[in-house]
Length: 361
Image 1 (cartoon, helix red, strand yellow):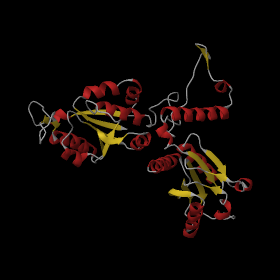
Image 2 (cartoon, rainbow, N blue to C red; image 1 turned 90 degrees about the horizontal axis):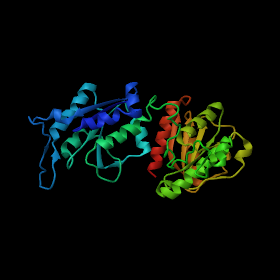
Image 3 (tube, one colour; image 1 turned 120 degrees about the vertical axis):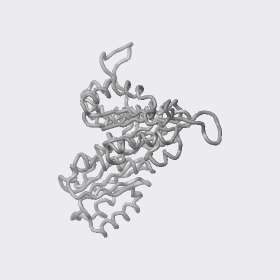
Image 4 (cartoon, rainbow, N blue to C red; image 1 turned 180 degrees about the vertical axis):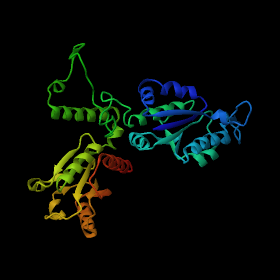
């Protein structure tokens, strides 16, 4: 990942980006943070880049021309126009899904404003994304740019070591992370929870999920409205089972897999609520037992549903299944079609697409 940070204060970026994990990642070639001093593109002999605002008012406004020249200098070197992010309180508030999306780019321009902002005309001509790191005002965009660099770089392969990385980041499920403990077992008369010493990985995961829900409910109840329990139902052979497991693992840490190849399971009632997401993974070819018979015991309550087809189904089958799911209380969120076996990269792309759709609800 290559970052081009357009700024009036390059030393702020250079010092922070050269330290700790970011510094190590840059040294090892996993990321590259280049600062572009906007003052270098000023036509003023004093390198001035700001002027009084038209219409009056306090403060100064950064001029369009030096900013435009700075952006063009990067574009000309690359030979194309990368995404250009303007850090501003007026932008969309940065979240984990946006971070993952930005991490899929090869280059990013991060434009840091100052004073009262930047001439609107150059923003209209050069900026592709407006991003805020929170509902407050900073003296400039540099700290916001550093937050973006840090958050995005965590998803760049090689940046985090095995000890630092985790399959799931805090907020991946729109849940706050569970509490962490290390040695000693007793500190200030406070004991480590017994379940963490049990060695029972299933119980540990259940405890962690429960604590994540509890902590989110206490500290960030607003996140619970965006948090969904994922129930993945699949039919088909080994390819379907592998795809269901891989995709569910990319979407959530706490998903449930239901193998509907098992006739006994198909006969049981499976009820989902408004905060449950049904992930349905099916082969394109029709099974011996039709969809209406296979999924008649699935029930939703305006529950969102994502269909993943392993191969192209017959149009009539798609229509009938969509009608059946709607009748049984599900609302179609998205539908994906795979022409070949699902790999890690494709599963990651689908998972990101699903999270984007969930955020639109």
